[in-house]
Amino acid sequence: MPRHVLVAGGAGFIGSLTAKALLERGDQVTVLDNLSTGLLSQVPEGAAFVEASIGSRAEVAELLASSPIDACICFAGLIAAGESMTEPGRYFANNVGETTVLLEELINARVHEFVFSSSAAVYGEPLFTPMTETHPTQPTSVYGETKLMIEQVLAWMARQGSLRYVALRYFNAAGAVEGHAEAHEPETHLIPLAISAAKGERPPLQVFGSDYPTPDGTCIRDYIHINDLATAHLAALDSLAQGTTALVCNLGTSHGYSVREVLSAIEEVTGLVVPFTLANRRPGDPAELVASCDLARDVLGWVPTRSSLNQMIADAWHATKGDAV
Ligand code: UFG
Image (tube, rainbow, N blue to C red; front, top):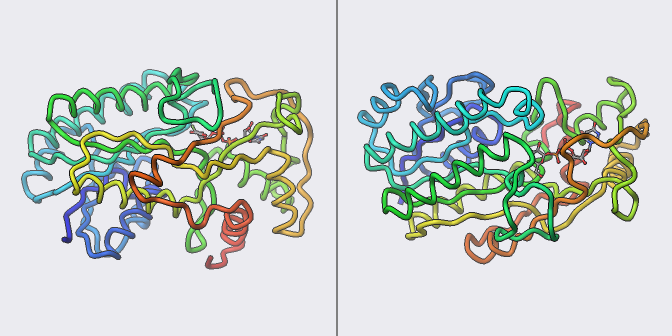
């Protein structure tokens, strides 16, 4: 049955993709976004749009009073782990304070189904790998702590019967859709930086650490295509509609690639050489982050379909050239 979904942060990259996928399957969508990092041009055609912050209580209450919303997906939040260490107050106020206001207003309006963008950053240093959802959570960044705090708020609200939720812990988002790559300013992510270096648009890539206890000495990560992340949110909504009360799920592929393997794959896909230098470790980087994805498969029926390393790199590469992917 078509539903009316509130997509908070739906002018952002993964939020707008998810909003589009919801519309394509016949759901009704209202996007709530303060456009602090999102773009109005990314809100898909067919979605209603309200420009406000998730922490603007009066505006959120008015929106919920005027539209009968069935469920909410929240992508809104600050996402830079490095920045969170220099501006902790802003991260706690935005990611924890504002999200809590949104949750309160949803409960007041009797919207009881909530999907939350969480992160592998909640785990901190891995004690074992692949990491299951039961792995201890000891975030090494303020960003990870803010995601964990909202997971705890959700767990308490669910325990009290106020709402039902799915928290999705993204591993390393990668790839591009329809010629659009995720762009950050400043860019800190490996794949876009390495592609720019290969194109000569940036200086050689700095490989942060080559003395990690991994086979080639560089960090291992589990990369997941943004399109697969978007479809996981639809599966999470479906599971809530079927009565799920509380679920925390990893979103990755269960396969890890080292920085050197990623650079080799970029060279293979693009036919260019990625110039790089070996640099010191970046503070806060764990040696290996690989998800166990059994729960997402078994409970949500979600299986990534576009997340082979070469496919993600090809999509990101074509997007930098403006090709449709
Ligand atoms: N790296 C380099 N050089 C660079 C950039 C990155 O060597 O110029 C390395 C990093 O040290 C790391 C790997 O490439 O080992 C991936 O780094 P990214 O910056 O692309 O991504 P992170 O693993 O640091 O973090 C991302 C998200 C986090 C999320 C995490 C979950 O940004 O929010 O994935 O796995 F928590």
